[in-house]
Length: 329
Image (cartoon, rainbow, N blue to C red; front, side, top):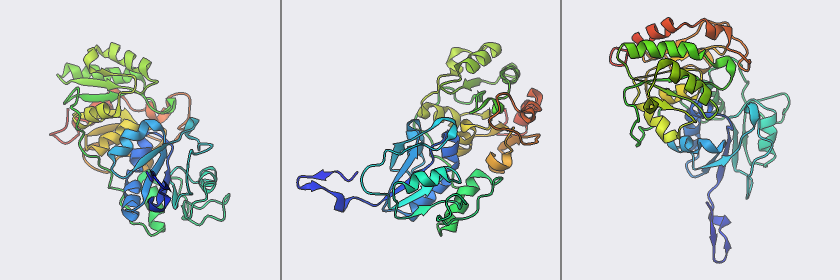
């Protein structure tokens, strides 16, 4: 952003830079929006650079707090090995990725003038608040910033209405995929919900990520959905955002689309297990229903968690009828 002049680098006119590390998924980014906006308000003259997967650039832009996305990712939600940072060190670096020490060390390797992060015994030179494992994700990062004197509101999470038109306005959107098998409710149960909703006269649409085509195809076939209501292959953010914003409701596991629906005030029925809604759930509003039977389990398991399997199609259908009357299918 600093550019060059005919006489050489324009470093003296470049704005100070604030680097935020959150190299995770869509749901993680949306849960971090309140913290990102708090940083934007606290550092209005800084260029706010978000280190995150390249595919999240449209979502980062939609939140209105990020100036530039620095592509960064690693398998299995790990800390990236390096960041492609150029130019002078960041004036401020903020660890919104985890509690360290790998994320601390990555940011510290860039020699920022100031590093904001949680305390960890592996990096004793970094002062910060204590990490609480069971804390809600939105609250956690806002508490981190408040410890450093930055006012942050965990309810500041809404996104502006998309400019793109919805391809299926008024549909109940089902999303059978999630980041791990442990958080995937069986596709046969989603199909039972879809079939029942269509029998009652409701339009049903199904979405899936880039690696979830098989799930989407199986659900669409079992429920007899027309191709016009099937959005596989990881639809572009603008299309997905429009679909969710104009949906009658979104039914999914604990994954990114649930956070996107919350950001657009779209009613949700979210199926939790193995991670409880107290850590990743929607705000306590009548238009959001979180189904959870516990106990907590392994979020990285290779099969649906037992807590998730305790949720039945009838329970999901009943939850949809419990939504506020103007929203309930």
